[in-house]
Length: 271
Image 1: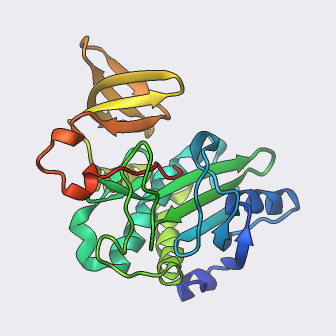
Image 2: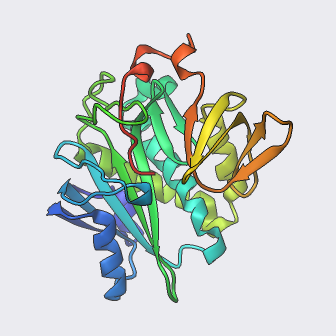
């Protein structure tokens, strides 16, 4: 693994590992030991990868597993916006590495990257409380393989027709992340991030199901508000504003605009 020259010039560092439990866990342990970053930690393989709500994340060699550790990236109340920053940076890296794939790549709220309607990358943001705040931005991209069972369809770059290795993709990602963090500007640039995210969004105006713990909501994806929350129009005419949850399209199985890859079984990756 190598950093892009632009990342090196700004003082970003890289710790490339062979096998670790979790790149996020390793980054947060570094933060507790006094590491301030910015530091990327990558792994060829993870043995204890995890997604949102502690879900297991299969992490065999061939895909990209990377975490960026940042210290005091923004006021604490703006840190959750990094989810959208990271999603855009990952989208940017994929389409830069495989330019003709661009029309087939989209974002699903809040931070999944889809190819042909199937999940190809996911992001997990975790923080280490204290002063200053430390944040681990975990990113997983399916380069060579993906799970074949689960709640949401999955795919990988090779299956989509593009051979992009994790090292090649990471080098680009280390630059696109820098660009998006600069645009975000510790939160002051979130309106621009929001606008760019919406340009790449899937599901707007469509019926969706949102799973929030043990609770399910169904309605129409109305908008993505100024705070980054999902707003859905419920069937009773009211709206619900959601800060975190898992989104599933209600009409995916019957939508003629979705390609066959979107109908295959898959497993949700980390968000």
